[in-house]
Amino acid sequence: MNVECLMFREMIENLKVVSATYELYINGEGGKEELMEKATEEAPLTWCQGEGMMLPAFEAQMAGKEVGDNFDFVLKAADAYGEYIQEGLMDLPKKMFFNGDGEFDEERVYVGAIVPMNTVDGQIVKAQVCEITDDQVTIDLNHPYAGEDLHFKGVILSIRDVTEGELKAIRNPHHCGKCHGKCDDCDSGCGSCKQ
Image 1: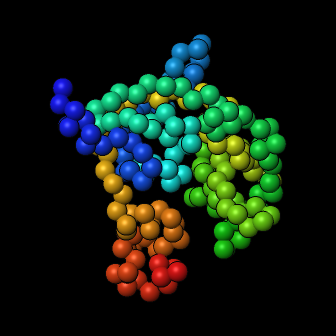
Image 2: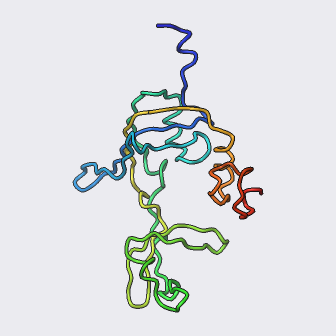
Image 3: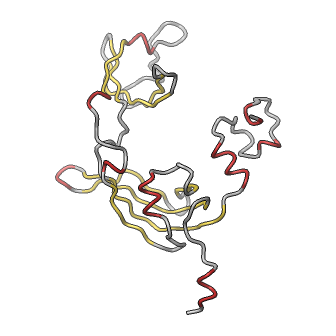
């Protein structure tokens, strides 16, 4: 094998953009694994390693892999989305979900919907609607995969250096999105790209 060729092979390390196919399984009924998510060659999973786009334990499993490498690993719940916390299940007054006309927002709030919620310190978190009654809405602040071990299988499709524009967009998530990370060329007038 040519040692010179090995020296220039791209491997997954920080500030590399990686694309991969994957299948995500969790334990289903009777201990049988259930497919929850899938990314194909036509629509791969793409992330920038080391920039917090993926779970830290996922990135640790990917570090050092090369194009064409297969992966097959399990992240325990504690290393994924944590254990399920019962206090994350909350009953809220239905009036909190009224629209501007003073009526319950049935188009946006329904069982299974993911709705943004403001915390007391002003952060926005996503909650899943679990139940709706005449006077209250039950939401779950736990991640849908909380308490689950995650089994990932897939193949690394490509690895490349991140561009300056991509890195700027990743690190400044408040841009308007119209410039696709090319904030210096943005003429949307939103102002947030120039911050």
